[in-house]
Image 1 (tube, one colour):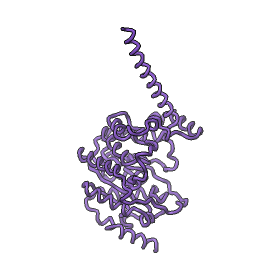
Image 2 (cartoon, one colour):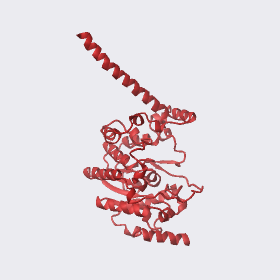
Image 3 (cartoon, rainbow, N blue to C red):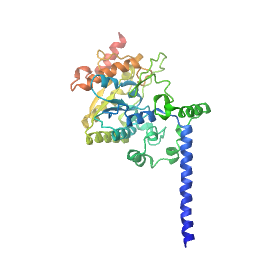
Image 4 (cartoon, one colour):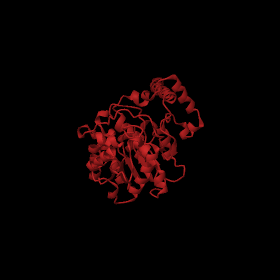
Length: 357
């Protein structure tokens, strides 16, 4: 009888050992092959304030927000006492929801600034099917927030791409060696920006999550703005936007949505008009303040196509600092109508007049 019970225990023990070996091998492959990315650095930074004070104002979004919003101005102009920009290149609205949850888990956050880029609201991006790098999920520390991310977003996906992060693997031996070398450094082990790979084109890091992009003098190629229509709207993204709104309201956090400026030619030729009009509508419906950077008058913020590294809207550092100062002024005021064109028709007309002068 005892022998039978022992065999039964041994059977389950073998399963546990087998799974443990698999888990160790997966982590080993991920450690060696996955890029030491920026998400790891900024999430850890937000969870461990260098000042010893809670981050009270947090910017979340994707690459446009990272290149355009410098939190140093929030600090210098008295809008926040300890701000940080947590925008991550490629982060979706779904990622942003869990980023908000994560940063609020460790900080007494009073203000969330959510950068809105219509390209991340397009259902044609196939967010459900595209695993990408799972940028945010892969770097969240183990917590209730991460477990909810798994339960709500990952249980129906192919587990091999979730835990065995092959889409993020180095494709060349030279790159693999570079990743391993970085991970051996004290900078990587201590979560310092010097321990992050892949930042060569971002411009110098200024701290607080902001990169001052060096002005690009090369031609940006053919103007080909990303399309957007209401028919392309991803309802899942809208649902997660509303989850961010609800979470902020439930926790007495002020939520402000911001669209950062893109090149004037892209505004005139692209989908910003319809997309950002939709953003204003959904923000109004949820009683959330919305600031559309494209509608800031040119005499307030002088924007030209040369202020961007591409037609999509990644801002060079000089304009980013100017925009950050103007944005802080707007954030501090309740009524800023004089800063903005009344609509896109007036804005585009002003762009045409400037281009013909």
